[in-house]
Image (cartoon, rainbow, N blue to C red; front, side, top):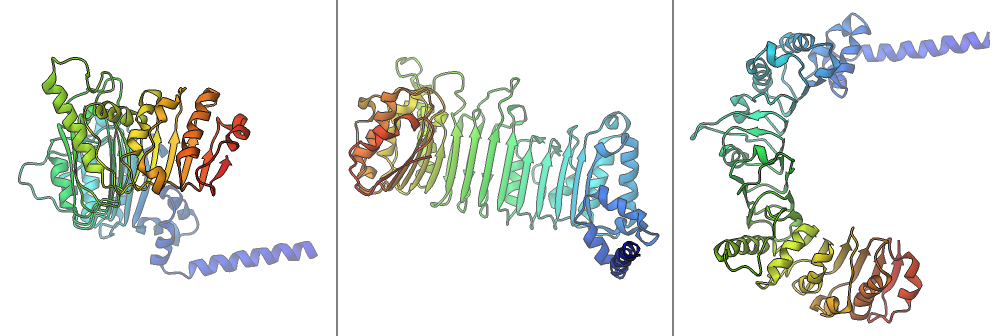
Length: 455
């Protein structure tokens, strides 16, 4: 009896919950379903007769073609969904298409008609990934409601010079492996987004025009990366950035030969991994005088880039970039990084000699993180120069070296900081120092308040 009573009690509570949900109006139910994937939203149609069409009122589509047995089933579903309520405004449209038969059975026009449809219905968030380089329609360039745009593997349609481009509400743009049909599309697209805050461009050499130009008065976060594929073509691609409000900039590019940073925020945080397209040859030929003109041009490219980032407050820099700077420093004086307070540098043996010189250009440095993933040898002569920041500002240092690094090299580097940093409060030693930590603690410290921490 007790067990039967408990079962009936649970059933009653479940029925009460169902009744409570059914009491909600259709707009509220469609809003609840909008937080689910379209696949799960459709499943709600089996709950009751009333629920059969609720999912068709959801202003959100999040769908993958891989959920269907074939392209024809997928196309049929898309047509039914878009035609079910032609007055429905879309908040979010997220579509992943991995067509198997699509290109042989249909044309770009069908795909473009879907995008035209949601653009015409005031879509705010558009996310499209199509594994067949289908073209986005021209209507995309004048969507008045779009707030975020993410495109993967599609083609941006050709724009005639003088075409009107206007995306007045767009704040976030993510373009990844997108084929751009016309070198000036990005030049027109980015300045036509007056409230753009975050921009991500990931591409490969085969999709590049001669110049990638990022000009924006509103942009605050920029990520730009070029993936160097085996069949990629190294050309004279150039990058130009003019964004006076830019606060975070990440560059990962071993293809572009020139980087011009015209304006970014003085308090910007930058992550730099560039080598000016010199992956397979020396950047600066110090011994050969036959190519003085080319060498001078390459030096100017490096000089312009360093000058462009010399006002930033925080910097993460790769060993590839430091190698370029090291070659450059043998020919010309490095600029001062007067505002730089935080630096994370990945060194290689070939660029380690640059460390004291580069730190000498950072008179206000507070925090330094040194990393090395390859075997290096450090001699006292390489780290004999004492930069100004050691005396006046450097308080925190973290060092990570490979466990294969010789004991003498590890001791030399630890001694360099402990004996010369007058205001350092903490030296953090990562893996590679564990077996010599007792010897390091015995090194005399110029800063009496300095703690040595092993992590």
